[in-house]
Length: 341
Image 1: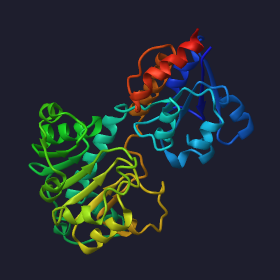
Image 2 (image 1 turned 90 degrees about the vertical axis):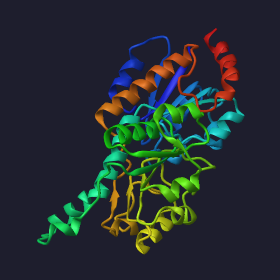
Image 3 (image 1 turned 45 degrees about the horizontal axis):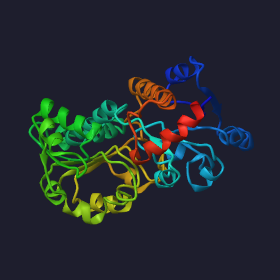
Image 4 (image 1 turned 90 degrees about the horizontal axis):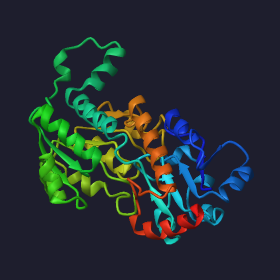
């Protein structure tokens, strides 16, 4: 019988209920604050492992790296609890023929709404005025003179589920012009959404707001640095709800401090949550949230359902809906067939 082991919990209880309501696949829970020895006794004969996508929520010993894989010789599948897969070394899994899947699209609506909410708050200085009002401000309203989102040019980096939804909201709700950079999606995707396919430099120099929706990997780590920020239009805004470490926080602080950028909306950080002393938190024109863009009741239930149903489908011999390393699928199926037989 195939065996699935999950760490601590799923995004919501409904996914656990789905897993535990069936009897064809063994499901075992391990805890990050329990006995490591007992946890790895379960993991040593597990065929599938479910883990959170947030690296600061998972102890290093339970993150899927070379050391972890050396202790889990029967593992065939690793499933991330989110759209990202920061806690999983995909390259190491691929070398061993281990299939990696995520839940991309499950929280796209929540993250897209959060990104657009940050845009509106930055432009209309909602966050700034709230801070001042709580401190006893009694000045002229024109101190918070802002801008409309209507008719602005939005640069969308990454036109997947979330980036595409951001573009859709901005086009239909605010008549925005969308410039998008994504070398991994077909031209039809741009046309379908109504976004103009752009080179990165053009997007940066022409956008009033740049919003980021790409995964963290070797290619994108520290991709958004000082050179990137200085190419952005002077007075524009930077928003990211993707992953920390894609943008360089020190470089962002420099362009906020110099006034080159008018502000930023940040949901993701190198360290989550960031320390209260973090230098970006001292700026009134920086909106800070602790990686909560996708954390809504609606999205957590949807993500949890995605997790459970995809795990059960794959371990029963079906095809993954959201594979990360599709190249190992055939090898995975051969190994799985031996277990199910």
